[in-house]
Amino acid sequence: MRLILLGPPGAGKGTQATRLVETFGIPQLSTGDMLRAAVAAGTPIGLKAKAVMESGGLVSDDIVIGIVADRIEEADAKKGFILDGFPRTVAQAEALDVMLKDKGMVLDAVVELEVDQAALVHRIVNRAEEAKAAGQPVRKDDDPEVFKTRLESYNRDTAIVAPYYKGTGKLKKIDGMQQIDAVTAAINAVLGA
Ligand code: AMP
Image (cartoon, rainbow, N blue to C red; front, side):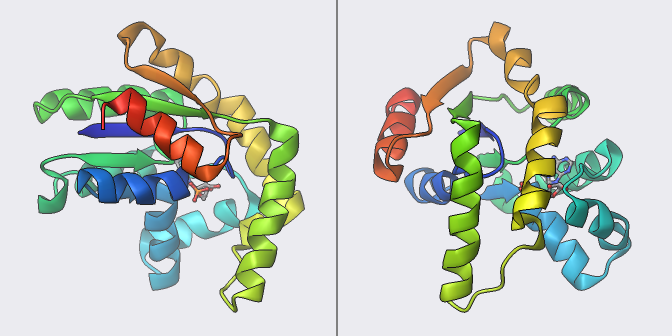
């Protein structure tokens, strides 16, 4: 199973991806996690990405496409993967098409979580408060002002990614405002799990 999870920041992609990992036994490939790891490790990619991530903008297509191309070559991704946070631009979606074609891989579905953006700011404030209460580090980009910038990036660059897949018959829209379990059930239903 090769899947893309789409939806604005805070839509619940990470939560649902974790569940899909268990259901399908395939890895979650989160470009956000990969970039945060690169920042933490102080790699050249991390050094380039740090400031733009902290401001809520998008890291350059070249960097992100490069890390995904490397990651899907790894052994655990051979039988499938869940892309979380990628593609975020049409250029990334086009590059992914080329990548998959070159590797003889086929995409099974693109799951789009549809959410009310006004509610997202509340969700993200909760996520930051929960992390703080649990003694976990709070993501710098979960600051409400930075979050708004992330939402703007989404609306400017990423909202057009779902329509890119419309003609393929693979795009599955899910109401992401339901309870977490109901969202999971809806995703499993469209994927035939
Ligand atoms: P996320 O964890 O998916 O919300 O990503 C956190 C941040 O990493 C984003 O706000 C971007 O700065 C950067 N990022 C993650 N994935 C991508 C991507 N596919 N293209 C560009 N920037 C990305």
